[in-house]
Length: 404
View 1 (cartoon, rainbow, N blue to C red):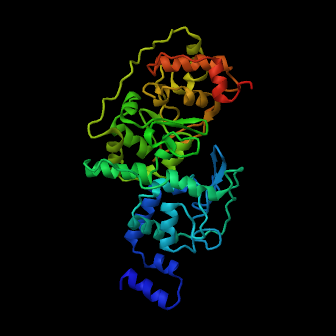
View 2: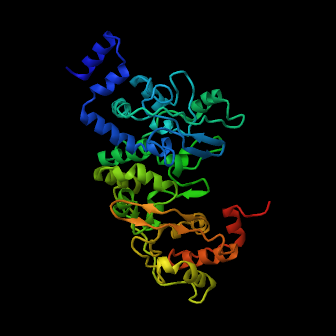
View 3: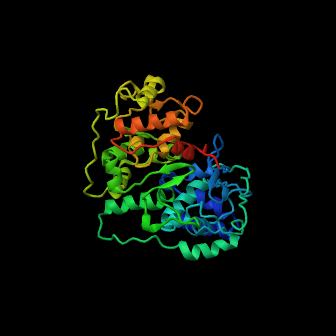
């Protein structure tokens, strides 16, 4: 008896078809559903730090207020346990709950709009196989006028719809990479600028944006190559969370932890083909010789507060701190992330196997804004191959210390 026959019998007997659907799913369907849920990075938004997976509660800052990830376990009171497969597909791809409530586009239904029904059903079967968690997530309550959900109907008319695909002549691998990046991975939600109404600017697809004070850098082929990326390095970074170009931190670390480390090698390769092209540009190599003065204030700051972990020559220390040579953060056009990392620090990071990086302290209490600027300039000139310099005022602006 196949799964559809089981569902028909369940309806005839008055059984709960949601449980019947999950119970009738074979192991391969459940495994595929788990893979797709991970590829879609659902846990990153629907799991509170230290909380039960998929039980919701994680706060997400937006320009319009805080949105909370909801409970997507099969709990019937607070989760999605009462959803049918049809309703789940509609919520996933249209952003509208069964009762007609419109979700805020912090839930990336505009990207998920292109998820095929077969994949949605596999995701549904997996989520319904989980243990229900009877936890209510905090209710999102944005300030007026954003609190009026009915206005989202007009927003959807303007900005939601089919994801354009004008590259039918591309290879199957490229198309798969596009699905993994643009649809399931919804990378553009963070790496594409948004307009004043919070919609991604499709004319600047994957050209970088600022999220919670940090830059989600451009993922275009030329910009990736300019920062030293190759397709192989990109695949390693996504799979391991660390490569010669540095390690994942901030919001991207959650993406690695919940999603990219589980992806199959063929999908990681397809993503690199989509992002960098079938014929990728050559990675730019930066001369390791210091262009900054050996006795500059920036170098003295580096030796005083950085060299103990990153090495006097910027070589890094395995399992302790990444190398400065080839580090992508030093090579970004804008110094925002480097300033923020030095000022705020980075939490300890645990990667695959025994690989990890210890916590990096912030130096806001040890270095003045002028000293941070000198250190940043030294790092970017020495190992980033950049000539642009910043001053204390720029540091104050980026760290929120500027006077009103």
